[in-house]
Amino acid sequence: MFLQTAADDDLLGIAMGYKFHGYGRGQGAPWTYFCRPDGGHAVSLKREVAEPWLEAVLAQRLPADVDLRKGKPALKPIVMDKAWFGQMQTLEVAESAKYAGERSKASWLPDKAAAEAWKKHSKGMPYEVPDQSLRKPSGLISNLVVNAVRPSETKGDVWKIVANLKEGDTFCTTGSPWVYTTAVGKVPEVVRGCDWIRPDSDAVRFTGEKMLEFTVTDKAVVYVAHDEKIAKKPAWLADWKDTGDSLQGGYLGNERSFRMFSKAFPKDAKVTLGPNGERPKGGFT
Picture (cartoon, rainbow, N blue to C red):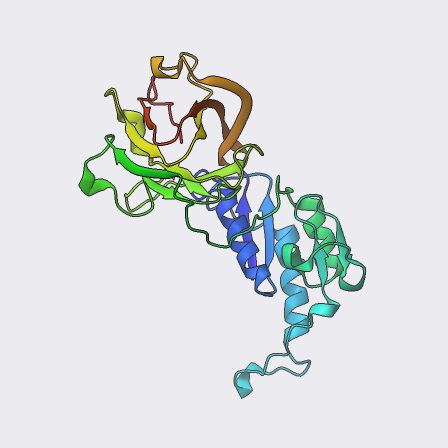
């Protein structure tokens, strides 16, 4: 499969396609992921990459004497050991026998010509696809109460306690038919793998005093990531410590930085988070 996304895709986001490709390659599928460095959602295929790829695949899979008038031909199998592979971050390519990285994390490429075209025109990814194994939350966060929405609206994947914060996770989704999904692009080490609360994008409209509350079942340091575009921070963040770290979120090529603030809480303490402050640019997780 040839999977193309574009760097300025602000509807689906590069991280979603990258994560999907990572799943397929992890299962051994001969999938190619190409990030076009220009264009947005629904941009046309990059012919300089797609054409040599297609020509190579057809040559490898179709029998030499194919005649469609005689019916559907029997396709030849893909021979992985004869393929080329591309490193998703550095864009370095090599034939299977000489590829030094993990093939299961690389972009599969049918031959040398396709590999060279892929390397020349691709945009490298900023991180490796992280471990996608499902984990259950540790139980450190409990008694979550969300005041930003009515109880009947806390459905789907929003306003849930989630385990294992990592690159590629999604947040700020909405329940509309056209779902705008924001993906985590860079996670500071201090919060990587932590339990977290996945918000929705409607939170920016909340103007009350207590947006959400929860209890920590053991002593803990709680982190809030707040949109750096909001120059004036809300009053409730005044006694939280600015860590100097930022979480990146959004769409590859169009990310936003969320400044990390921390505060220590004792066992069984109630944590209260207020509104974002300014709107409509705000957002925190």
